[in-house]
Structures are given as structure tokens and as C-alpha cells.
Amino acid sequence: MPFEHKPPKYVQVAEELQRRITEGDYPPGELLPSESQLTDEFDVARPTVVRALQLLRQGGWIESQQGKGRYVLGQPALEQVQADSRTSADLIGPFSKGRVEQVLSTGREIPPNRFRDLLKAEGQDVFLRRTVLVREDGDPSEVVTVWVPLDLANGTDLESAERIPEGLRRHLEKRKGVRFDHVLERITARMPTEDDVQVLEMPEGVPVMVVYSSLRDAAGRPLAGLCVVMPSDRHELEDAYSLV
Image (cartoon, rainbow, N blue to C red; front, side, top):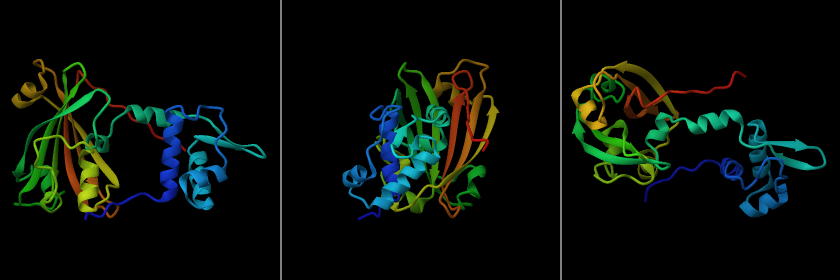
């Protein structure tokens, strides 16, 4: 039975309350349930609820008023910008909201030079999974290629020609007991290859943006290499970060 990592209880509580705020279950200005009510609902100890509420307050989701309780402020502006943008982690997650994943190819190959040192696969095969994301309007949006070390790919559904509903990230975390922690990215631009033009149905003369990513665990071990090819006339890259 695969070992499944789960975040701490207080993080789970905080994430669920964030979801309710984002989806409007707790609109701005509304008083949150009391600590006692949340303790009973989530079946956790009071310190767990207190810590979850501290996370929400520090993140700007709620505010405390002495003698009254905790009021909802809403989704912080920075969170809203980040929610509308996509990261490398998102691209190996489950796809919804107007995008469909189509598997182009799977198999084993020696990775490109850029990923050989990264995956410690000099002269060795790694597993490759290549997909194209298609928008609601039917236009191909980007081509996503993921390279995964064979020891992580073995015993998974990565070789399937069908999409993985929970996404590659969650699939590997559940099946192999790994935990994705951070991403290193590099963005470049180039003219498209003949294959890019065909798969992405691109007009001539339009360059592509290419995002190369290293997805790692907390110890810095590379779990996957990711390459995303995007037509420059269909995408804008946006980032948001705190200045505090």
C-alpha cells in the first residue's frame, strides 16, 4: 500500500477555510465560526484550530476584533493574482477550467543535455511523458514534456495513454511517497520547430516561450524535469510577490 503524505492538521483546516472564503461560503465582513465550533466540526484539538486561524490572519484572510471574534476580510489581492496565474506545479496537476490534456507520447529515452545532470541520468534512460493542453475554444495552448527518473516512474500510470485525473504531481506523491517542495525555473525564447508548428497549429514567424523547470523535494533532490512550449501570441507571463 503506497504511503501518502498529508499536510499537518492545522494546514488542512486553514486550507479548507481558505476554500470557503474563496468560494463565498464565508463572504467578507462575516464572522467566522468560533474556535469551539471549528474544533467540533474538524474534530481536532483547540491548539490546532488556533494555529490555523493564525495562518489566515497572517496571510490577510481574516482579522481579529477583541471581544467580538474573527471577521472575514476576503481573498488577499496577492492571492487573487497568483490564483489567476499558472506555475510549473500547476502544469503537472489536474486540469480543469477550460483546459483539456491530450497525451501525445510516453516512453523511455535519454533526456536532453539540459536535464541529464539535473536528473543524474548521464547515459541513462528516463521516463518521458508529453502532452498538449487544449483550451475550450479548441486551440492548442501549450506542449508540456515531463522527464521523470525511472525509479519514480516504475509502478505508476505514467505510461498510460490516458490522462491522469489527479495530475502527475499527486499521482507520484501517492504512489511513490515523495513530496514536491519547490521549483526552479528558467524562461527562454526561440523560433518554433516544425513539430511545434504542427502540434500547436502556429502561424509562421511567431516565436515560442519555453519554460524549463526543475521540480524538487525539500532536500533538493530532483523529482522531475519539465519543459513547457508556449506560442508567444497566446500567452503572457505574470508574477506577483510580496515586498515585505
